[in-house]
Image (tube, rainbow, N blue to C red; front, side):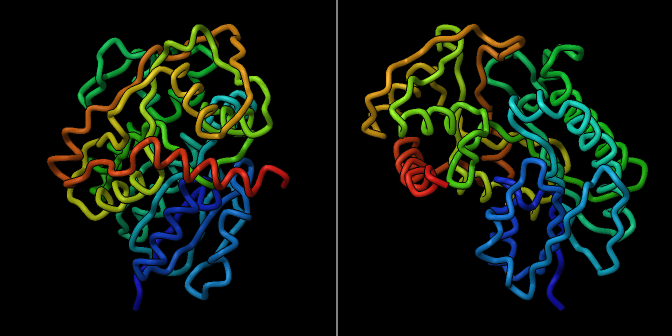
Amino acid sequence: MKKTALVTGGAGFLGSYLCERLLGLGFKVICLDNLITGNIKNIETFRKDPRFEFIRHDVSKPIFIKSKIAFVLHFASPASPADYLNYPIQTLKVGSLGTHNALGVAKEKKARFLLASTSEVYGDPLVHPQTEEYWGNVNCIGPRGVYDEAKRFAEAITMAYHRVHKVDTRIVRIFNTYGPRMRKNDGRAIPNFISQALLHKPLTVYGKGRQTRSFCYVDDLIDGLIRLLMSSVASPVNIGNPNEMCLIDLAKLIVKFAQSKSKIHFKPLPVDDPKQRRPDITRARKYLKWQPKVSLAMGLTKTIAWYRTVMDT
């Protein structure tokens, strides 16, 4: 009997890649998604696979699954500032009630649980690069707090279930990830810049563009997630690319790669926008034998090529 994995948020950007990779590894996959930010097109290529099942469901409401489940991967949540500012209550609910419900399934089925947390738990960091031991610098009542605190709560309840109910848990702190399937109106830097560049519109850069980010190509990230899922590491693990760059430099690079005529347009810096972000991946290297392989140039080339195919749709 093939093992079954339940993926919440499975029609989203990362969730769909996880579903695809798990199918490739021989799993049966149950995908739950309410499609607030997910897209049914992300799972079209494997939706007819007899080992795949899609259920439209809001995981903030109770989850009932009859079949045996070996793994629960909780990836349901708005993940870009544009989304969690549009859906603040839903973001808080999926991080709290949704995580509680997904953990309940893992407890009932005696399944291993993987929580998709985020580098946003570090807030606007005072420690650089960010290690898993850093507790963060978060404004809990600011506009970004709905996402930051939802994920911090999700980590807390995951560890509580691990300690009290002995649920076999994993926590990944995901740093900025990009690649095909990201919505052109996603709101994050790379899809924004690529969409604007391909239309030869001004690229929107906030502040002076000196804030830094570290960008990991989706294939590398999924590899790290699978390695973590199959490991014995219960404490949080950063997964991301430690190569750091300023957003203004990223914008200029995308203009070059897209062969665009776009100029740079500056806007005021959003509230609580982190000034710097770079993962310390020592733990991932040591325990997962993982590090990113895809260069930014290669990743952007693949991503821009994909966006050219969907810009008119």
